[in-house]
Amino acid sequence: MSAVVTCRVMREADAPRVAELAGELGYPSTAEQILLRKAVLDRQGMSVVYVAEAANGQIVGWIVVSEICSMELDPHAEVKGLVVTGSARSGGVGATLMEAGETWARSRGLKEMVLRSNVIRERAHAFYRRLGYEEQKRQVKLKRRLA
Image (cartoon, rainbow, N blue to C red):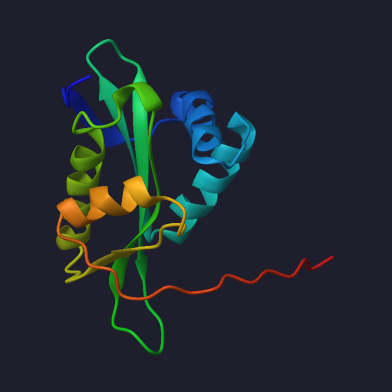
């Protein structure tokens, strides 16, 4: 598949397909979960969710970009999630989504965009490097359940 897609802001009706694609990324989700998460992002007002829509109307990918501010870093954009369906990979869809995210970040006056990618996703790392991203560090993610 070529990159003949339109990037647009996610709509409520997109939730089932966005959930399917989250599963392809390794994060099984329901449409209801996607809608709840999107509502939180919308309420916070610091993120955008774009979908890539093919000419036939099928959603073939999505990206979430958030504005991040912390004590140790200036405000910047961070890709919180990016997925392109398997049949559309290597066709320019991911690059189109990344460009949409970068454009959104620039519109907010942000000067830098960062992302995190699982160390096992070597193909994704090569993709990001082709777009001009450079590896900064590797880290350990820890989690504790708060019951």
